[in-house]
Length: 423
Image 1 (spheres, rainbow, N blue to C red):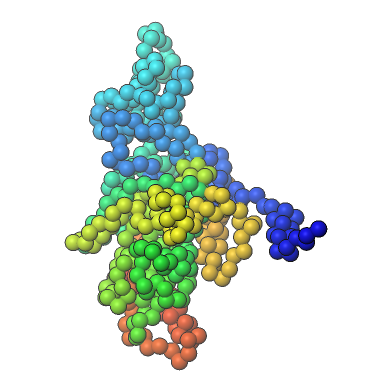
Image 2 (tube, helix red, strand yellow):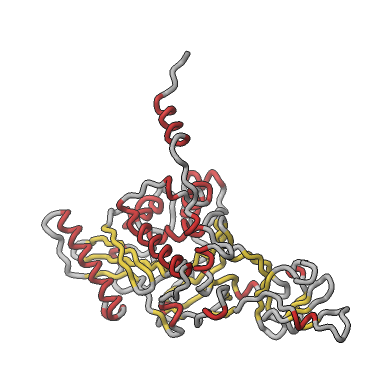
C-alpha cells in the first residue's frame, strides 16, 4: 500500500483536526440589530449617485435592508422601505409623481418622508393613512452623491463636511460605484495595508503605480482625531518622500496620487480619492465616493486597474488586482481565527480595535465621540504626500530606517497639530 505524502497528512490535520473558528461576526455582520450594523447606522452613508435618480425608482440594498430611492417631480429625494405596507408590492415598480411615489398595485401614495398621502378605495371617513407611516430614512444630497442616515432619529448628526470636499486648486467629482462580492471589512482593511503596494501593485502588467513602489519603504501607523493613518516613507537622495493615507471611522479612506515619479514630486499633494466601503449586506460591498484632480489635470476614468471583476478571469489570474485579492479571502468573509498576522499587519490590528471599540460603545448605550458626528463644519483630515528636503542618509541602513520613521512621524504630528500648511 502506497504511503501518503507527509505534507498531505499535515494539511489534513491542520484543516480538520483544529477548531475551525467562526467569522468575526462582531465586526462583519451589518444587518439591523447587529452590533456592527447599529454602529454603522450612526454615520451618514452614501447610497447612490445623484445622476442615477431619473424617471424611475431605484431598488437598493444597504446594510442588509431592501430600500427604494427616487426623486419626485418637485426634486425631493425619498429613501423608503422597499415593500408597500398595504400588501407588500415592491415600490421599485412604483409610479414617481409630482409629489412622492405611488404603489402600482392599489395606488397608495407615499411622500418622501414616508407619510401616507392617499389610500384610494378607502372610505372618506377612513383614518387608515393617518394611523400608518411607511419606513423612510433622511437623505442629504451633496456634490453628486446621495447620503442616508439610517440610525436612531434622536442621534441623527449634522451632515459632515470633510476638509477635502473643498480644496483650493482641486476639482471634485462623484465616482461611479463598484460592487465587491465580499464583506466590507476586508475591503476597508486594505486601506491600512501599505505592504501590499510593494508586491500586488508592482506585479508585471499591473497599472497605476510607479516603479518607486518597488523600493522597500519604512511603514508606520498613527492614530488621528478621525481615525488613523498609514505612513509610507521612502528616500530619494537627500529627500524623504512621506506618503500618508487616511482611515476615517467607520468606513472611509483617502489616499494620495500614485502616478507621479518620486523624483518629480515637489509640492504637497492632497488625496486623489475619498472612498466609502458601504456594506450592502454581509457578503456584498459598494465602493463609492469622490475623485479629485488638480485643476488642469485629467480626471481619473473608471474604477482603475484591478478595482472590479470586469476583466476576463484568466487575465485576473495572471495579473490580479485589489478586487481579486480581497474578494477571494476565505470565500468572501474573512475568518480572523485562520489568519497569522505579521508585523506588517499592525495597521489592520489597530483598525479592528478602533472599530470594535466604537461597536461596543454603541452596544453599551453610550454616545460616540467622533468629529464627523458633532461638527457640521470642515472636519480636518490628513492624507497627503510631500517631499522633505535636506535629510542626509544616516550612517547605517538600520539607523536610516529609524531616521525615516522619525521624519515621517514628525510630519504627521505637525499636520495633526497645525494643519497641512505647516507640515
